[in-house]
Image 1 (cartoon, rainbow, N blue to C red):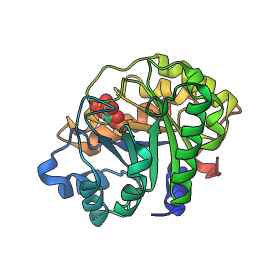
Image 2 (tube, rainbow, N blue to C red):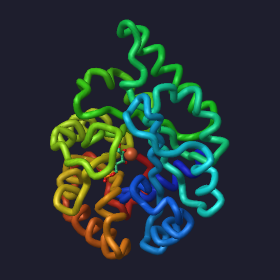
Image 3 (cartoon, protein in one colour):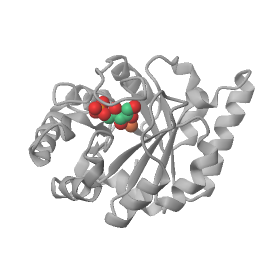
Image 4 (cartoon, protein in one colour):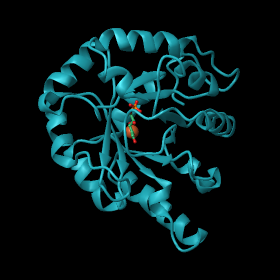
Length: 252
Ligand SMILES: O=C(CO)[C@H](O)[C@H](O)COP(=O)(O)O
Ligand SMILES: [Fe+2]
């Protein structure tokens, strides 16, 4: 665990982050090796608790097992009701960036919600890893509130969290534009239904990290899938004056 791995994620932008959600769980080591050979720099891990979302995926033992097979940064998407309770176990297992959902933090009023989010951000930061905040397409943007300035990354969901293979919701593009205009330096990640046909628009909107599950793992040749996605992503022009070029390598 380390913030140094967070810098690896920053420097990799713009970058495609394969999600392992629909890969062959009977051969995780082989899947990671295939993705690494295809040029993957960061892995996206979807943790679901069957409570916050109606699906179960995996927890710390899988994160820990993956950590033993790769040095790549592990970007862990927590779709769980109590991210604070699992933050330290996840970091001990090898997570480098923990992203939790604003929807998991709702309190009885705005003040309680704000307190919960600030507490979660603080606790994760104290563990020495990156912090991300995620929002579902059905959640009003005001629930992100003033919290973007506190985090390293905003995860704009382009499907309702819970399952791979869903259809892309274009409301995510407008949201990315809004966040990028207000926060030129925050990392913006998009997740859900990303394919070669929509990844360029996400880039153009100002996104810099692109989670892709089924459009990679449904393909027999991961390398070919990632090359196609990269080309389509880079073909999406960046919004003028808001982002550096990949070659600048600047810290944003
Ligand atoms: O967070 C997720 C689901 O909640 C996954 O990261 C996402 O669905 C990736 O899969 P796909 O690209 O097939 O949509
Ligand atoms: Fe995800």
